[in-house]
Structure formats: C-alpha cells, structure tokens
Image (cartoon, rainbow, N blue to C red; front, side):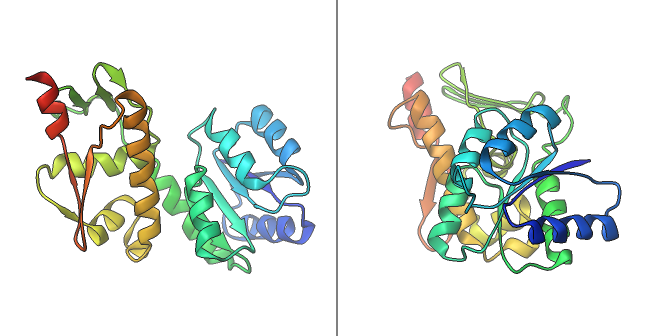
Length: 236
C-alpha cells in the first residue's frame, strides 16, 4: 500500500514515517512539503491514502483536498493542529474522510487509516441482491450504481455505504449512532458531524440532478430515513 503524507513540518513527516516503519512496514510512504507538490505527487504515485495538513505554505490543504476529490475517491485524512469544530466540518465538507488533530499517537493514526480503508471499500461487484426501485430512484446493488431520472449519482464509497444502509432499512428511521457504527465504525458513534456533513453532500448531489429532490429525511432527535415520495410522485 502507498500513502502520501503532505506537511511542511519535517518533524511531522518523520513521525508519520516512523509510525509506518515500526508498525506497518509494508507501507510505501511518499512525501510532499506543500500543496503544489502534493498534487503533482498524487498524479505520479497514485497513492491509496492521503494524509493532509490544512496549513500548507502555498495552497490551503482544504483546496488540495477539494481538487483531489475531483479526480479520485482515495481516502483523505486531515492531520492538522486546527482543532475547532468549524475546521473539522470544513475539512469534511471539502471531501476529507477523517480528521485527526495534532499531537497524535501512532496507534490513533494507524487505527484511523485502517478504519477509513474499511469503510471506503463497498465490497465486490456481482451481488445477487435484487435492485431497489421506487419511482425514478434506482439502487442497483450488483454494480453499485445509484441513479435518479436515469442519471447516475456520483457518490463516494462512504456516501454509497450511508445510502445503502438507509435504503436497506427503508421506510424505517435509522438511529444516528447506528448509522455511525455501521458506516464509520463503533469508535465513531459520537461523531455526529461526520454524519451531518455526508448527508448534506448526498443531498447536494441529488439536487444537482433534480433540483429540490431530497432523498434523506431527518427525524429530529432520532436519526434519518430514506425519503422517496418525490421520486414516486414523479412517476405518477
């Protein structure tokens, strides 16, 4: 596996390198000290995971994350000294899969990387599950294709997994902690911002296809359910 670590602090790069050398020596670590070289290294090396600081000397790590998301679904983990909730939300909104604040422990970093690799894997193609269809909403489990009005919805693996669990439980409400445990892992059951941001990103992608269409209903204080009344009504 190949990991791209982007940070202008050589001590952080060294700490990440030592972490892998001691506990995951199979990892091939690629380094970049700024945003421009990160984008260049990503194109050349095609890493499996990106560890990305926000405060880079040229391009903001948020901008780097956004530009990477235009070309890849590879997991991106923000590793930064910025520890406010607003910074975390901004990182997730630009496409980061996880957010770790400095200082960090080797075990925490490795655990987060392994967790993000688990949840960004949506399983093999070819499942025998029957497609879920309601009106103009189609969820084909066999090829991981979700579409609305015949247009494919471009979801990341994490977004796909979130919508998968809502679809499999339709029309019931799924509790927030249950969704966080199933999609992110039990260690994330209190990270409600992760869930809120990904729900917003899914909504935005459906809205881009059919303005005003919202596939996820918020049951205040409880959780979320799949809301397909609009898709069904569109077929009437």
